[in-house]
Image 1: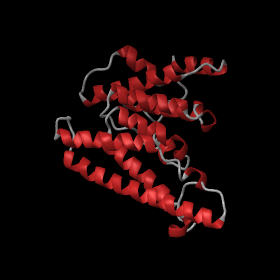
Image 2: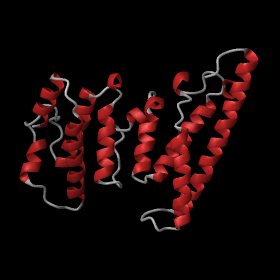
Image 3: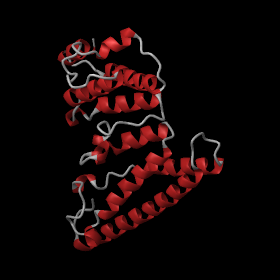
Image 4: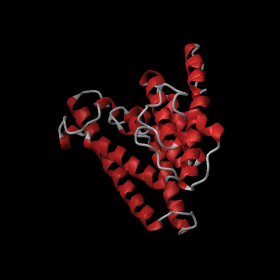
Length: 235
């Protein structure tokens, strides 16, 4: 069913976001059913059964959730790309979190946000984490981005000491980081009113994030002064 819909829509350049959202929702639903040992209806299972889709590897023979997640991974690899800005990765991430905000997000979905091109898509990931109150992950990700930007200062670290291309090293979503700091303040002040929230952990992360912000700002100041002194463009 999904194969036919995706191939047909792709041939006519029709947006596939709703198809990807539907698959993502099924993935989360199957995972929850297996975790709680609830039976999955036959009409649901047939969607990801062997033989229904040529994209399901034959070595995955157990568990509807494993086959569904693999199908989603293959579809994303095949029909989503940097050329279009990875819109289906964004749609899938949002739908997963909307369906179950506590679910573990597969690493292969996060590759575009944590790999070499992440500077271009960091806003999307951080915005999604904030939207669904994944404050710990949002904090760790923001700190990582800020440290990456700070470490790209050639005076302090040298020009080859970081992994991201120089053009991406300063793609810092500062407005979202401000929102994150406010959200952390609110969560810490709530003193456990948020279910599953470790306020001490969030307080430490809030402190680490503020430190990373200050170091990043100082790095930008130093680099700006160097650029002015050398009469070269400021990044």
